[in-house]
Length: 380
Length: 123
Image (tube, rainbow over all chains, first blue to last red; front, side, top):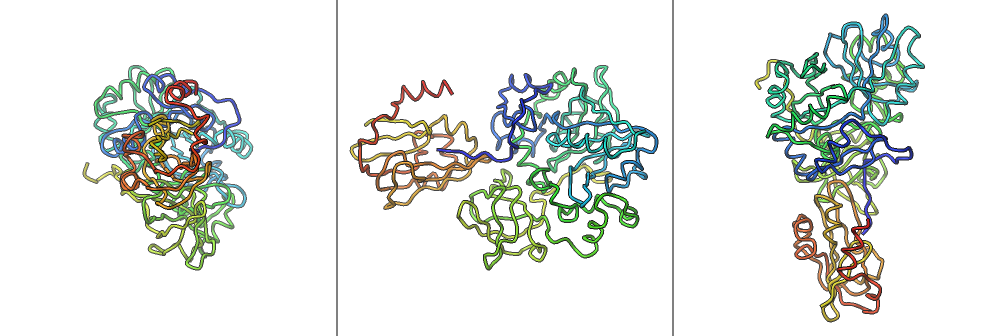
């Protein structure tokens, strides 16, 4: 038997250890190389952990991600030179999804940026953080200072019971609404908590001093509704939620328009431009992109994974699968990928080719599993 | 009856000239939750080292190679219908296929159960 494991960049550097390394091992986490670190891919099993998160609350260690603080005069205007977000009118403590772009409008990384007074707290992907920092330092004016907050860990508590669990530990968090953050205190430690995540469920992301991370993870998982969840379920949860993963569904060959992320470019930025790749991106907004990111429902039970070809009815190659797997919630294979725009309509029949075998599939709307975010005014 | 194991984590149970083939408990533990299995149909000829079946978990796709040559006499429809059988009973109900051995000499040099269980401790 030989096995191909997907969704891991090839590791060449020595692997780092994160603040919760021994915490994961003590709980039976199976550690694998990921984004330059050893990280838990699973504890009891991906399927069980996935379903637990959809029903209860799952605790994820995402300390591999880069936490940055951007400060200096006119930081908002400076950030607008390298990203298409509207940072000048960004509301305090409200995370905004944005993208670092190259001169051709290709995506260097996707990130969350939150105004905190005059500063911006930015969370970038783990595998790309060093390149992002180098890019930002090169492109931001000299008066803007970029702090890489390496002494902070980052946890995510996700699931329909997450608010109930975290409220017992950090009173007040359940007053946050989706995409809102704020400072909190836990046993003398300053926390930054936002109501956000990467699973499609309600939940929180918690920036905590590395020295207090294990104690906080303990305090959360003592609750009977919370369990530690590995990277495997993180990937299957975000795929069901239709959320793209950098390095797979997004890269410098894709633009925000191709990727269906145009919500990250508001009216003012479209009118004014002034971000990298604006000429191409504004043209794609106007005339449509050559390819689009779509969801795919696949006939049968066999997963079709990253790298599989997408073919039209005549057998011509029209795109590629960028993420694919078995959906634990739906109990069937799902995938996302890019197709030529004329085939991006929901319901379009296509064929997928993987290891010489053809699969029938259909373009479908995402998310595959409905989002259940805690929006203001919505009932809990 | 004799039981053999390969370094590819397959087991072969031999009764007369018939071999039943599956993957070991260690292999299913490494794969995790199995969501798909494809087994060969009766009548197909497989030669040693050729891919004969497919098994996929949430995370990974694997080929199962024929550890010996022969003609498939039965594929296990039960694992195709319910792949989780490979997780719950990998060395029993979770078998993949049976074949009629071409050459029992191909079994020479495979590990017996004790040797296999000892060997996986070193992995």
